[in-house]
Length: 269
Length: 269
Image (cartoon, rainbow over all chains, first blue to last red; front, side, top):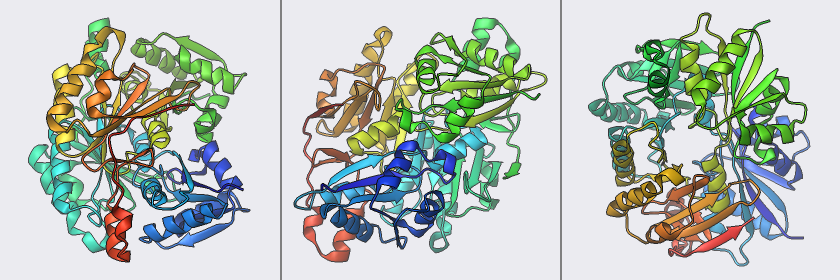
Protein backbone atom coordinates (compact mmCIF):
# COMPACT_ATOMS: atom_id res chain seq x y z
CA UNK A 1 0.00 0.00 0.00
CA UNK A 2 1.30 3.43 -0.93
CA UNK A 3 1.06 6.07 1.74
CA UNK A 4 -0.07 9.62 1.15
CA UNK A 5 0.01 12.75 3.26
CA UNK A 6 -2.89 15.07 2.49
CA UNK A 7 -2.49 18.51 4.01
CA UNK A 8 -6.12 19.56 4.37
CA UNK A 9 -7.62 23.01 4.86
CA UNK A 10 -10.79 22.46 6.88
CA UNK A 11 -12.09 25.99 6.32
CA UNK A 12 -12.85 28.72 8.86
CA UNK A 13 -14.91 26.56 11.20
CA UNK A 14 -18.49 26.19 9.93
CA UNK A 15 -19.23 22.65 8.80
CA UNK A 16 -20.95 23.89 5.64
CA UNK A 17 -17.76 25.67 4.58
CA UNK A 18 -15.75 22.41 4.64
CA UNK A 19 -15.33 21.42 0.98
CA UNK A 20 -16.54 17.98 -0.16
CA UNK A 21 -12.96 17.22 -1.25
CA UNK A 22 -11.64 17.90 2.25
CA UNK A 23 -14.44 15.86 3.81
CA UNK A 24 -13.74 12.91 1.51
CA UNK A 25 -10.03 12.98 2.36
CA UNK A 26 -10.77 13.14 6.11
CA UNK A 27 -13.21 10.24 5.75
CA UNK A 28 -10.72 8.08 3.84
CA UNK A 29 -7.77 8.84 6.12
CA UNK A 30 -6.29 6.17 8.38
CA UNK A 31 -5.40 8.95 10.77
CA UNK A 32 -6.16 12.69 11.12
CA UNK A 33 -3.46 14.78 12.80
CA UNK A 34 -3.75 18.37 13.94
CA UNK A 35 -3.88 20.96 16.66
CA UNK A 36 -6.54 19.92 19.16
CA UNK A 37 -9.03 22.68 18.30
CA UNK A 38 -9.14 21.43 14.69
CA UNK A 39 -9.21 17.69 15.38
CA UNK A 40 -12.12 18.44 17.75
CA UNK A 41 -13.99 19.97 14.80
CA UNK A 42 -13.18 16.93 12.64
CA UNK A 43 -14.47 14.59 15.39
CA UNK A 44 -17.72 16.56 15.59
CA UNK A 45 -18.23 16.38 11.80
CA UNK A 46 -16.98 12.81 11.29
CA UNK A 47 -17.48 10.84 14.51
CA UNK A 48 -15.64 7.83 13.05
CA UNK A 49 -12.42 9.72 12.31
CA UNK A 50 -9.25 8.45 14.05
CA UNK A 51 -7.66 11.66 15.29
CA UNK A 52 -4.33 12.39 16.98
CA UNK A 53 -4.16 15.71 18.79
CA UNK A 54 -1.04 17.79 18.75
CA UNK A 55 -0.20 20.86 20.81
CA UNK A 56 -0.04 24.25 19.11
CA UNK A 57 3.50 25.34 18.34
CA UNK A 58 4.69 21.79 17.67
CA UNK A 59 4.35 22.23 13.92
CA UNK A 60 7.61 20.57 12.88
CA UNK A 61 7.09 17.53 15.10
CA UNK A 62 3.51 17.20 13.86
CA UNK A 63 4.56 17.37 10.20
CA UNK A 64 7.38 14.89 10.74
CA UNK A 65 5.13 12.40 12.54
CA UNK A 66 2.54 12.72 9.75
CA UNK A 67 5.17 12.10 7.07
CA UNK A 68 6.59 9.08 8.89
CA UNK A 69 3.12 7.51 9.01
CA UNK A 70 2.69 8.19 5.28
CA UNK A 71 6.11 6.62 4.66
CA UNK A 72 4.83 3.51 6.47
CA UNK A 73 1.96 3.30 3.97
CA UNK A 74 -0.80 5.12 5.87
CA UNK A 75 -3.23 7.62 4.41
CA UNK A 76 -2.67 10.61 6.68
CA UNK A 77 -4.66 13.86 6.83
CA UNK A 78 -2.77 16.74 8.44
CA UNK A 79 -5.33 19.46 9.12
CA UNK A 80 -5.02 23.24 9.20
CA UNK A 81 -7.87 25.70 9.66
CA UNK A 82 -8.75 27.83 6.66
CA UNK A 83 -6.55 26.90 3.70
CA UNK A 84 -3.68 24.50 4.39
CA UNK A 85 -1.50 26.60 2.09
CA UNK A 86 -2.13 29.98 3.76
CA UNK A 87 -0.29 30.19 7.12
CA UNK A 88 -0.97 26.44 7.25
CA UNK A 89 1.06 23.25 7.37
CA UNK A 90 1.46 22.58 3.61
CA UNK A 91 4.81 24.30 3.08
CA UNK A 92 6.46 22.71 6.09
CA UNK A 93 5.20 19.25 5.11
CA UNK A 94 6.55 19.65 1.55
CA UNK A 95 9.91 20.86 2.81
CA UNK A 96 10.32 18.05 5.31
CA UNK A 97 9.12 15.42 2.82
CA UNK A 98 11.92 16.44 0.47
CA UNK A 99 14.50 15.54 3.14
CA UNK A 100 13.16 11.97 3.50
CA UNK A 101 14.16 8.89 1.48
CA UNK A 102 11.89 7.71 0.03
CA UNK A 103 9.97 11.00 0.05
CA UNK A 104 6.31 10.34 0.89
CA UNK A 105 3.71 11.64 -1.56
CA UNK A 106 2.15 14.91 -0.38
CA UNK A 107 -1.01 16.57 -1.71
CA UNK A 108 -2.55 19.88 -0.66
CA UNK A 109 -6.33 20.34 -0.33
CA UNK A 110 -7.34 24.03 -0.35
CA UNK A 111 -10.07 25.55 1.81
CA UNK A 112 -11.97 28.77 2.52
CA UNK A 113 -9.74 31.02 4.63
CA UNK A 114 -10.66 32.94 7.78
CA UNK A 115 -10.09 36.19 5.88
CA UNK A 116 -12.60 35.20 3.20
CA UNK A 117 -15.16 34.13 5.80
CA UNK A 118 -14.62 37.44 7.62
CA UNK A 119 -14.97 39.42 4.39
CA UNK A 120 -18.25 37.68 3.49
CA UNK A 121 -19.66 38.52 6.94
CA UNK A 122 -18.62 42.17 6.60
CA UNK A 123 -19.65 42.72 2.97
CA UNK A 124 -17.00 42.78 0.26
CA UNK A 125 -13.89 44.55 1.59
CA UNK A 126 -11.45 42.29 -0.32
CA UNK A 127 -13.18 42.81 -3.67
CA UNK A 128 -10.20 44.49 -5.31
CA UNK A 129 -6.47 43.94 -4.79
CA UNK A 130 -5.61 42.92 -1.24
CA UNK A 131 -2.68 41.67 0.80
CA UNK A 132 -2.69 39.05 3.53
CA UNK A 133 -0.22 39.61 6.36
CA UNK A 134 0.47 37.96 9.70
CA UNK A 135 1.68 40.03 12.68
CA UNK A 136 3.24 36.98 14.33
CA UNK A 137 6.96 37.58 14.73
CA UNK A 138 7.64 34.08 16.03
CA UNK A 139 9.25 33.09 12.71
CA UNK A 140 9.73 36.43 10.93
CA UNK A 141 11.62 39.54 12.14
CA UNK A 142 9.26 42.31 13.30
CA UNK A 143 11.05 44.86 11.09
CA UNK A 144 10.07 42.84 8.03
CA UNK A 145 6.43 42.83 9.15
CA UNK A 146 6.47 46.63 9.58
CA UNK A 147 8.06 47.03 6.14
CA UNK A 148 5.37 44.86 4.58
CA UNK A 149 2.56 46.73 6.32
CA UNK A 150 3.91 50.06 5.14
CA UNK A 151 4.59 48.85 1.60
CA UNK A 152 1.16 47.28 1.18
CA UNK A 153 -0.87 50.27 2.36
CA UNK A 154 1.34 52.75 0.51
CA UNK A 155 0.61 50.77 -2.68
CA UNK A 156 -3.14 50.90 -2.00
CA UNK A 157 -3.84 47.30 -1.02
CA UNK A 158 -6.62 46.46 1.40
CA UNK A 159 -5.13 44.39 4.24
CA UNK A 160 -6.34 41.18 5.84
CA UNK A 161 -4.34 40.88 9.06
CA UNK A 162 -3.85 37.46 10.70
CA UNK A 163 -2.57 36.87 14.25
CA UNK A 164 -3.01 40.54 15.18
CA UNK A 165 -1.98 39.94 18.76
CA UNK A 166 -1.53 37.41 21.52
CA UNK A 167 -0.86 37.56 25.23
CA UNK A 168 2.89 37.36 24.70
CA UNK A 169 3.04 40.24 22.22
CA UNK A 170 0.13 42.55 22.98
CA UNK A 171 2.19 45.60 22.04
CA UNK A 172 2.70 44.44 18.43
CA UNK A 173 -0.79 45.39 17.30
CA UNK A 174 -0.34 48.93 18.64
CA UNK A 175 2.99 49.14 16.79
CA UNK A 176 1.34 47.93 13.60
CA UNK A 177 -1.42 50.53 13.95
CA UNK A 178 1.19 53.26 14.36
CA UNK A 179 2.72 52.20 11.03
CA UNK A 180 -0.66 52.12 9.31
CA UNK A 181 -1.63 55.56 10.67
CA UNK A 182 1.44 57.19 9.11
CA UNK A 183 0.05 56.17 5.69
CA UNK A 184 -3.75 56.17 6.10
CA UNK A 185 -6.16 58.74 7.56
CA UNK A 186 -7.80 57.90 10.88
CA UNK A 187 -11.24 57.69 9.27
CA UNK A 188 -10.19 54.80 7.00
CA UNK A 189 -12.94 52.16 7.34
CA UNK A 190 -11.64 49.00 9.01
CA UNK A 191 -13.24 45.97 10.64
CA UNK A 192 -12.61 43.04 12.87
CA UNK A 193 -14.18 39.60 12.93
CA UNK A 194 -13.59 37.18 15.78
CA UNK A 195 -14.36 33.47 15.34
CA UNK A 196 -15.62 33.93 11.78
CA UNK A 197 -18.28 31.29 11.02
CA UNK A 198 -17.82 29.68 14.47
CA UNK A 199 -20.06 29.79 17.55
CA UNK A 200 -19.74 33.19 19.21
CA UNK A 201 -18.86 34.94 15.94
CA UNK A 202 -18.51 38.69 16.47
CA UNK A 203 -17.85 41.45 13.97
CA UNK A 204 -17.53 45.23 14.06
CA UNK A 205 -16.80 47.96 11.55
CA UNK A 206 -14.61 50.67 13.08
CA UNK A 207 -12.42 53.48 11.82
CA UNK A 208 -8.63 53.04 11.80
CA UNK A 209 -8.39 55.66 14.55
CA UNK A 210 -10.63 53.58 16.80
CA UNK A 211 -9.05 50.17 16.13
CA UNK A 212 -6.69 50.74 19.05
CA UNK A 213 -9.67 50.52 21.43
CA UNK A 214 -11.18 47.41 19.87
CA UNK A 215 -11.11 44.02 21.60
CA UNK A 216 -8.67 42.05 19.47
CA UNK A 217 -7.05 38.70 20.13
CA UNK A 218 -5.31 35.97 18.13
CA UNK A 219 -8.65 34.59 16.89
CA UNK A 220 -9.53 37.95 15.32
CA UNK A 221 -9.06 38.86 11.66
CA UNK A 222 -8.58 42.61 11.13
CA UNK A 223 -9.45 44.19 7.78
CA UNK A 224 -7.91 47.58 6.92
CA UNK A 225 -9.57 49.39 4.03
CA UNK A 226 -7.85 51.46 1.37
CA UNK A 227 -8.73 54.99 0.22
CA UNK A 228 -11.82 53.76 -1.67
CA UNK A 229 -13.23 51.36 0.94
CA UNK A 230 -16.53 52.61 2.36
CA UNK A 231 -19.43 51.67 4.55
CA UNK A 232 -22.55 51.07 2.45
CA UNK A 233 -25.76 50.41 4.37
CA UNK A 234 -23.77 48.97 7.27
CA UNK A 235 -21.57 46.76 5.06
CA UNK A 236 -17.88 47.24 4.30
CA UNK A 237 -17.20 47.44 0.56
CA UNK A 238 -14.13 48.15 -1.56
CA UNK A 239 -15.56 49.13 -4.97
CA UNK A 240 -13.99 47.70 -8.09
CA UNK A 241 -14.71 50.91 -9.98
CA UNK A 242 -18.06 49.63 -11.20
CA UNK A 243 -20.01 52.54 -9.76
CA UNK A 244 -18.00 54.86 -11.95
CA UNK A 245 -18.43 52.61 -14.98
CA UNK A 246 -22.12 52.38 -14.20
CA UNK A 247 -22.54 56.15 -14.02
CA UNK A 248 -20.88 56.73 -17.37
CA UNK A 249 -23.05 53.97 -18.79
CA UNK A 250 -26.43 54.98 -17.40
CA UNK A 251 -25.95 58.64 -16.57
CA UNK A 252 -27.38 57.86 -13.15
CA UNK A 253 -25.40 60.07 -10.80
CA UNK A 254 -27.15 58.64 -7.77
CA UNK A 255 -25.33 55.37 -8.24
CA UNK A 256 -22.09 56.98 -7.10
CA UNK A 257 -23.65 58.88 -4.21
CA UNK A 258 -22.79 56.24 -1.65
CA UNK A 259 -20.74 58.00 0.99
CA UNK A 260 -19.33 55.81 3.70
CA UNK A 261 -18.59 57.26 7.10
CA UNK A 262 -16.33 55.60 9.62
CA UNK A 263 -19.31 54.39 11.60
CA UNK A 264 -19.22 51.70 14.18
CA UNK A 265 -21.43 48.69 13.67
CA UNK A 266 -21.38 45.70 15.97
CA UNK A 267 -22.83 42.31 15.19
CA UNK A 268 -22.88 39.09 17.14
CA UNK A 269 -24.08 35.78 15.78
CA UNK B 1 -42.31 36.24 1.06
CA UNK B 2 -39.08 38.09 1.69
CA UNK B 3 -36.59 38.10 -1.14
CA UNK B 4 -32.89 37.57 -0.72
CA UNK B 5 -29.94 38.00 -3.02
CA UNK B 6 -27.15 35.55 -2.22
CA UNK B 7 -23.90 36.36 -3.98
CA UNK B 8 -22.31 32.93 -4.19
CA UNK B 9 -18.72 31.95 -4.83
CA UNK B 10 -18.86 28.60 -6.62
CA UNK B 11 -15.15 27.89 -6.23
CA UNK B 12 -12.48 27.39 -8.88
CA UNK B 13 -14.42 24.87 -10.96
CA UNK B 14 -14.14 21.39 -9.47
CA UNK B 15 -17.46 20.18 -8.08
CA UNK B 16 -15.79 18.88 -4.92
CA UNK B 17 -14.48 22.37 -4.15
CA UNK B 18 -18.02 23.85 -4.11
CA UNK B 19 -18.86 24.35 -0.43
CA UNK B 20 -21.98 22.71 1.00
CA UNK B 21 -23.23 26.19 1.94
CA UNK B 22 -22.96 27.37 -1.66
CA UNK B 23 -24.62 24.18 -2.93
CA UNK B 24 -27.52 24.58 -0.48
CA UNK B 25 -28.09 28.19 -1.56
CA UNK B 26 -28.01 27.24 -5.25
CA UNK B 27 -30.46 24.41 -4.57
CA UNK B 28 -32.88 26.67 -2.67
CA UNK B 29 -32.72 29.53 -5.17
CA UNK B 30 -35.71 30.42 -7.33
CA UNK B 31 -33.23 31.58 -9.94
CA UNK B 32 -29.45 31.39 -10.49
CA UNK B 33 -27.91 34.24 -12.45
CA UNK B 34 -24.39 34.47 -13.81
CA UNK B 35 -21.96 34.53 -16.68
CA UNK B 36 -22.69 31.56 -18.96
CA UNK B 37 -19.55 29.60 -18.13
CA UNK B 38 -20.56 29.56 -14.46
CA UNK B 39 -24.27 28.85 -14.89
CA UNK B 40 -23.21 25.94 -17.12
CA UNK B 41 -21.25 24.53 -14.17
CA UNK B 42 -24.25 25.01 -11.88
CA UNK B 43 -26.51 23.21 -14.38
CA UNK B 44 -24.08 20.28 -14.53
CA UNK B 45 -23.96 20.02 -10.71
CA UNK B 46 -27.65 20.71 -10.05
CA UNK B 47 -29.69 19.72 -13.10
CA UNK B 48 -32.86 21.17 -11.54
CA UNK B 49 -31.46 24.68 -11.12
CA UNK B 50 -33.30 27.48 -12.95
CA UNK B 51 -30.46 29.46 -14.51
CA UNK B 52 -30.34 32.75 -16.40
CA UNK B 53 -27.19 33.30 -18.44
CA UNK B 54 -25.61 36.71 -18.70
CA UNK B 55 -22.84 37.88 -21.01
CA UNK B 56 -19.41 38.66 -19.56
CA UNK B 57 -18.86 42.35 -19.02
CA UNK B 58 -22.51 43.05 -18.19
CA UNK B 59 -21.83 43.01 -14.47
CA UNK B 60 -23.91 46.05 -13.52
CA UNK B 61 -26.96 44.92 -15.50
CA UNK B 62 -26.65 41.41 -14.04
CA UNK B 63 -26.45 42.73 -10.48
CA UNK B 64 -29.37 45.09 -11.01
CA UNK B 65 -31.57 42.36 -12.52
CA UNK B 66 -30.71 40.06 -9.62
CA UNK B 67 -31.57 42.72 -7.06
CA UNK B 68 -34.89 43.54 -8.75
CA UNK B 69 -35.89 39.88 -8.58
CA UNK B 70 -34.95 39.80 -4.89
CA UNK B 71 -37.00 42.97 -4.35
CA UNK B 72 -39.96 41.11 -5.87
CA UNK B 73 -39.58 38.41 -3.22
CA UNK B 74 -37.47 35.85 -5.07
CA UNK B 75 -34.54 33.93 -3.64
CA UNK B 76 -31.81 34.79 -6.12
CA UNK B 77 -28.30 33.33 -6.37
CA UNK B 78 -25.84 35.52 -8.27
CA UNK B 79 -22.80 33.37 -8.97
CA UNK B 80 -19.12 34.26 -9.32
CA UNK B 81 -16.28 31.78 -9.78
CA UNK B 82 -13.88 31.45 -6.87
CA UNK B 83 -14.97 33.67 -3.99
CA UNK B 84 -17.84 36.09 -4.68
CA UNK B 85 -15.98 38.72 -2.64
CA UNK B 86 -12.63 38.49 -4.50
CA UNK B 87 -12.90 40.11 -7.96
CA UNK B 88 -16.50 38.86 -7.81
CA UNK B 89 -19.97 40.37 -7.82
CA UNK B 90 -20.48 40.91 -4.07
CA UNK B 91 -19.30 44.51 -3.83
CA UNK B 92 -21.26 45.69 -6.82
CA UNK B 93 -24.43 43.99 -5.55
CA UNK B 94 -24.06 45.60 -2.11
CA UNK B 95 -23.47 49.04 -3.63
CA UNK B 96 -26.44 48.84 -5.98
CA UNK B 97 -28.70 47.42 -3.26
CA UNK B 98 -28.00 50.49 -1.14
CA UNK B 99 -29.44 52.72 -3.90
CA UNK B 100 -32.78 50.83 -3.95
CA UNK B 101 -35.86 51.46 -1.81
CA UNK B 102 -36.58 49.15 -0.16
CA UNK B 103 -33.05 47.76 -0.27
CA UNK B 104 -33.18 44.00 -0.85
CA UNK B 105 -31.34 41.80 1.65
CA UNK B 106 -27.93 40.68 0.36
CA UNK B 107 -25.74 37.91 1.76
CA UNK B 108 -22.29 36.83 0.58
CA UNK B 109 -21.26 33.15 0.44
CA UNK B 110 -17.46 32.71 0.28
CA UNK B 111 -15.65 30.11 -1.82
CA UNK B 112 -12.23 28.70 -2.63
CA UNK B 113 -10.46 31.09 -5.01
CA UNK B 114 -8.61 30.28 -8.22
CA UNK B 115 -5.38 31.47 -6.57
CA UNK B 116 -5.82 29.01 -3.70
CA UNK B 117 -6.61 26.15 -6.06
CA UNK B 118 -3.54 27.07 -8.12
CA UNK B 119 -1.36 27.26 -5.01
CA UNK B 120 -2.51 23.82 -3.83
CA UNK B 121 -1.63 22.32 -7.23
CA UNK B 122 1.82 23.93 -7.19
CA UNK B 123 2.72 23.23 -3.56
CA UNK B 124 2.52 26.04 -1.00
CA UNK B 125 3.69 29.28 -2.63
CA UNK B 126 1.19 31.47 -0.70
CA UNK B 127 2.16 30.06 2.69
CA UNK B 128 3.43 33.37 4.04
CA UNK B 129 2.28 36.95 3.35
CA UNK B 130 0.94 37.39 -0.18
CA UNK B 131 -0.87 39.95 -2.29
CA UNK B 132 -3.61 39.36 -4.82
CA UNK B 133 -3.60 41.70 -7.82
CA UNK B 134 -5.53 41.90 -11.09
CA UNK B 135 -3.85 43.21 -14.25
CA UNK B 136 -7.19 44.18 -15.79
CA UNK B 137 -7.20 47.90 -16.44
CA UNK B 138 -10.83 47.95 -17.55
CA UNK B 139 -11.88 49.62 -14.27
CA UNK B 140 -8.56 50.73 -12.74
CA UNK B 141 -5.86 52.97 -14.26
CA UNK B 142 -2.83 50.99 -15.45
CA UNK B 143 -0.47 53.31 -13.53
CA UNK B 144 -2.14 52.22 -10.28
CA UNK B 145 -1.64 48.56 -11.19
CA UNK B 146 2.08 49.15 -11.86
CA UNK B 147 2.42 51.01 -8.56
CA UNK B 148 0.79 48.13 -6.70
CA UNK B 149 2.97 45.53 -8.41
CA UNK B 150 6.11 47.46 -7.53
CA UNK B 151 5.01 48.17 -3.96
CA UNK B 152 4.04 44.58 -3.25
CA UNK B 153 7.24 42.95 -4.50
CA UNK B 154 9.43 45.64 -2.95
CA UNK B 155 7.78 44.83 0.40
CA UNK B 156 8.46 41.11 -0.07
CA UNK B 157 4.96 39.79 -0.77
CA UNK B 158 4.45 36.76 -2.98
CA UNK B 159 2.01 37.73 -5.76
CA UNK B 160 -1.06 35.94 -7.06
CA UNK B 161 -1.85 37.65 -10.37
CA UNK B 162 -5.39 37.49 -11.81
CA UNK B 163 -6.38 38.44 -15.36
CA UNK B 164 -2.74 38.51 -16.51
CA UNK B 165 -3.71 39.20 -20.09
CA UNK B 166 -6.45 39.10 -22.68
CA UNK B 167 -6.61 39.52 -26.44
CA UNK B 168 -7.34 43.23 -26.15
CA UNK B 169 -4.38 43.98 -23.85
CA UNK B 170 -1.70 41.42 -24.61
CA UNK B 171 1.04 43.98 -23.99
CA UNK B 172 0.04 44.53 -20.35
CA UNK B 173 1.57 41.30 -19.08
CA UNK B 174 4.92 42.20 -20.67
CA UNK B 175 4.71 45.64 -19.04
CA UNK B 176 3.95 44.05 -15.68
CA UNK B 177 6.92 41.68 -16.04
CA UNK B 178 9.18 44.64 -16.77
CA UNK B 179 8.08 46.23 -13.48
CA UNK B 180 8.63 42.99 -11.55
CA UNK B 181 12.09 42.47 -13.09
CA UNK B 182 13.29 45.84 -11.81
CA UNK B 183 12.70 44.53 -8.27
CA UNK B 184 13.29 40.78 -8.46
CA UNK B 185 16.12 38.70 -9.95
CA UNK B 186 15.36 36.74 -13.12
CA UNK B 187 15.80 33.41 -11.30
CA UNK B 188 12.90 34.14 -8.91
CA UNK B 189 10.71 31.01 -8.92
CA UNK B 190 7.31 31.70 -10.45
CA UNK B 191 4.49 29.56 -11.77
CA UNK B 192 1.36 29.58 -13.84
CA UNK B 193 -1.77 27.50 -13.58
CA UNK B 194 -4.42 27.51 -16.29
CA UNK B 195 -7.92 26.22 -15.57
CA UNK B 196 -7.07 25.28 -11.98
CA UNK B 197 -9.21 22.30 -10.91
CA UNK B 198 -11.07 22.29 -14.27
CA UNK B 199 -10.76 19.88 -17.21
CA UNK B 200 -7.56 20.61 -19.11
CA UNK B 201 -5.79 21.97 -16.01
CA UNK B 202 -2.19 22.84 -16.80
CA UNK B 203 0.58 24.10 -14.53
CA UNK B 204 4.23 24.99 -14.89
CA UNK B 205 6.96 26.29 -12.61
CA UNK B 206 9.19 28.78 -14.45
CA UNK B 207 11.69 31.43 -13.49
CA UNK B 208 10.67 35.10 -13.65
CA UNK B 209 13.04 35.57 -16.57
CA UNK B 210 11.21 32.88 -18.57
CA UNK B 211 7.64 33.96 -17.74
CA UNK B 212 7.66 36.19 -20.82
CA UNK B 213 7.81 33.08 -23.03
CA UNK B 214 5.06 31.20 -21.17
CA UNK B 215 1.61 30.63 -22.67
CA UNK B 216 -0.60 32.88 -20.56
CA UNK B 217 -4.20 33.91 -21.09
CA UNK B 218 -7.05 35.32 -19.02
CA UNK B 219 -7.81 31.90 -17.51
CA UNK B 220 -4.28 31.66 -16.12
CA UNK B 221 -3.24 32.50 -12.56
CA UNK B 222 0.40 33.60 -12.30
CA UNK B 223 2.29 33.20 -9.03
CA UNK B 224 5.43 35.29 -8.47
CA UNK B 225 7.63 34.13 -5.62
CA UNK B 226 9.58 36.32 -3.20
CA UNK B 227 13.25 36.07 -2.23
CA UNK B 228 12.63 32.97 -0.10
CA UNK B 229 10.35 31.02 -2.46
CA UNK B 230 12.03 27.88 -3.77
CA UNK B 231 11.42 24.72 -5.74
CA UNK B 232 11.44 21.69 -3.44
CA UNK B 233 11.20 18.30 -5.14
CA UNK B 234 9.28 19.86 -8.03
CA UNK B 235 6.89 21.83 -5.82
CA UNK B 236 6.82 25.59 -5.28
CA UNK B 237 7.12 26.53 -1.60
CA UNK B 238 7.45 29.80 0.29
CA UNK B 239 8.85 28.78 3.69
CA UNK B 240 7.37 30.30 6.82
CA UNK B 241 10.72 30.19 8.55
CA UNK B 242 10.05 26.77 10.01
CA UNK B 243 13.14 25.19 8.48
CA UNK B 244 15.26 27.68 10.40
CA UNK B 245 13.29 27.11 13.59
CA UNK B 246 13.57 23.39 13.05
CA UNK B 247 17.33 23.51 12.64
CA UNK B 248 17.88 25.45 15.84
CA UNK B 249 15.58 22.98 17.59
CA UNK B 250 17.03 19.71 16.31
CA UNK B 251 20.51 20.67 15.21
CA UNK B 252 19.77 18.87 11.94
CA UNK B 253 21.49 21.01 9.32
CA UNK B 254 20.15 18.85 6.51
CA UNK B 255 16.64 20.17 7.11
CA UNK B 256 17.64 23.54 5.69
CA UNK B 257 19.63 22.14 2.79
CA UNK B 258 16.74 22.47 0.37
CA UNK B 259 18.04 24.57 -2.46
CA UNK B 260 15.52 25.50 -5.10
CA UNK B 261 16.69 26.23 -8.60
CA UNK B 262 14.57 28.05 -11.16
CA UNK B 263 13.73 24.80 -12.89
CA UNK B 264 10.90 24.31 -15.31
CA UNK B 265 8.32 21.72 -14.46
CA UNK B 266 5.24 21.13 -16.56
CA UNK B 267 2.16 19.23 -15.48
CA UNK B 268 -1.11 18.54 -17.21
CA UNK B 269 -4.11 16.96 -15.54
